[in-house]
Structure formats: C-alpha cells, structure tokens
Image (tube, rainbow, N blue to C red; front, side):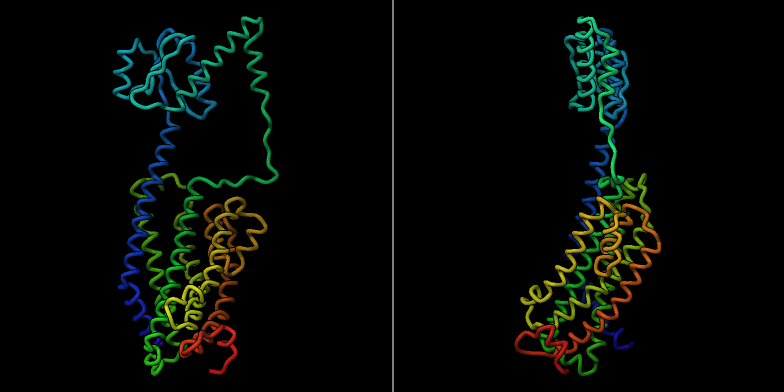
Length: 397
C-alpha cells in the first residue's frame, strides 16, 4: 500500500501542475461562469415577459380595456389598464415606468406608444382586443349576437390528451441534468486521457522500466488510476462549486425544485464509478502503444463506449425518464453513470433502482480491473510492433 500511495501522490502532483490541465480547467471554469450568467439573463428576460404590464388608455378607447385584459389573460400575461389624460401625461408616465405603453386614438384608429422598445405581449393583446371589437361590430350590424358567437368560437377547441404523461424537457430540471451529465462526461474524458498520456510517456521514455525495478506492474497501474481519479474528482468539485457559487449570486437557485444537494452527492458517486469503469480501460489500452500519436486510435473503442450512453442519456431520458427502456438501460454498468444523473434531475428515482445500479457497477469493476491490469502488465514492457488486446491477454508474461 505504501508504494501505491507513493505513485498516487506522484500522479496527483504531476496532474495538478501540468499546463494542459491548468489551461483546460481555467477555460472550463470561464465557460461555466459565463454560461450561468447567460442562463440567468435569459431567465430574467422570460420572467420580464410574464410580469404584470400596465397600459395607459385615454377616455376614447377606455371601452377596449376589458377586452385587452381578457386578451392578456389568454396570452398568459397579466395586463392592467390605467386612465391617462393625454400624450404629455403618458410620456411622463412612460419615463418614470409607471406604465409600459399608452393607447390612444379611437376604436377605428388606435395608436400605441412605447418608451423605447416594443413589448410584444402588449402589442398582441391590444391587436387581439381591437380585432375582437371590430368583429363584434360587424356581427351586430348583421343582426347577430356577439356574445353567442364568441361563446361558440371559444367552444370550438379540441380536447388534448396523452397516452402517457408528457415529460418536460425544458426548465431548471433539464438545465441541472444537462450540466451534471456534461460535467461528468468532460471529467471522465479528461481523466482518462491524462492516464493514457502518462502511460505512453513513461513507456516511450523507458522510465517505466526503472519504476518496475522496484514496483510491481499492478502497484504502478493502481497508483496511476487512483492518482488521476483524485485529480479528476477535484476537478469535478471545482466545476460544481463554481456553478453553485454563480447560481447563488444570481439567485437562479431561489425557486429551483431540484434537490441540488442530493444531485451533487450522486454526481460524485457516479463520477467515481464511471471513472473506475472507463479509466482502467484507457490506461490498459494505452500500454499497448509506444507513441503519443497512436493513443487516439487505440483508445477509440473506449471513447465510443462513452459516447453511446452519453447521447442515450441526453436524447432518451428527457422524453421519458421513467420509461421501461430507460429504467433497464440505467441499470447497465457502462450506461448507469450517465443515465442515472439525468434521471435524478427529472424525476424521483426509487432508491432500490439507484442501489441496484451501483451494485451492478461494483460487480463489474473488479472484473474490468483484473483484465486491465493483465493487459497493462504485458503491454507496458512490450517494445516493437503494436500489441493487440488478444495478444496481451493470451501471451505469457
């Protein structure tokens, strides 16, 4: 254990001080902070669109006020009307923001005045009210009853139903789930790449031969995996804390219905399990090559193995987080680290499903570690032509 601890410490120090790691982490932090502020800006704009709006109206168009309020309600916007004497008073009221718009003229010739920018909800409500008033006038002139016609028109709408309850794919839940899975994917890719690069560097420089003079291959491999795992975990913690800090400052978490504490705790669990599943494969496969240029080719299967569950989680879970296919796939070890954080962001996943998924991962990890250690043991000392996985598993050490 002491030797593994020494290798682990060496990997942690080396990982935290590498320029690529520092630059990538800094760029990601900037993107997270900027993204949080941008998301807060658009959320504020949306909230502003649904805020209470006040329209100043003159006596000549006051009869439209009830229709304007009703149209606003139909559009999902609360609109209030306020009597204003004329344009001069309206300009003063617009300047001090006591009203959002001023409506004047006549029912046949309406004029809508804004301070500096059009407010779409007000324009739509006034237009709808004016059209309704004009239609009522035409119906009356033809001898009909506008109230009966309006009742008939309002009743001519289809009844909407669903075979299954529709899942919302927008809002805070979707945002938190996407952030969780994106951070997890980035951290796993980065950690696995660091392990692969370190393995090839030591092999190509023949440093590994010196290290293996005092260490067993399993000890060296375990130290590299654990050390890079710690670096990756610190990176995830840093990203999550940056996001939480900015979200707290902007007030984006004030009305969030997602339990961030639970989501964050499970995210760490899935990072550790996902790292154990994928990182050992990155390190073992990298030991089969001796050049940095070959890392991408030899580790491509692991990358694909990560992309499949990642995109499955992103596109499949939001539409039906509790569907049978999603529930089954989220129990499979390589899918669980991506699909479970997405599911917990959208719905309450039963505890037994979470425990079952974790148990399956814990069963798969020892087998993967045994196979990875075997490949690493035989591949790291191999020189010459690239060694295949089959050769690494079948040839004698």
